[in-house]
Image (cartoon, rainbow, N blue to C red; front, side, top):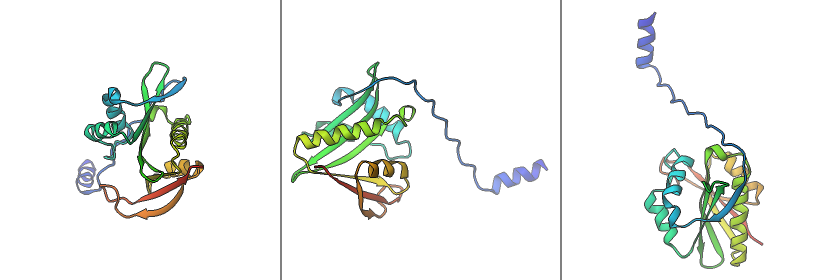
Length: 177
């Protein structure tokens, strides 16, 4: 019997790797602050933790975003000043902005932090007379899509093979009045 099981394992489908269970962080207070080059190391590590499947930006890309005068960047921090979330928005000419990336540390999710960060971004854009915010989201990322729809975003287009792994994305837009 053991020989048959060994043969099945050899030729059978490979087992999916176990995804480690995320340990939930203790509850606490959070504050939104500017994100600067001083936080590059922390946000690079956090970005990799938020997007482990190859969607994370490189340190070079994050450094580039932080050096652009048209980029707004924010972080959400704990009482101990630990960065647990971030958002980057590129402001374009003509009253539009692009939410380039937003992420919350897995152990701090389900606390409304992405909503708070998104609202903060929208208010900052309104203060600059920006009237449209666009973003892309994976077709399979239904939880993010739900959040964006809740906050008034609409799907305007499906972009085929947008991500490096070939997955499509939805282009979503929100009017900021």
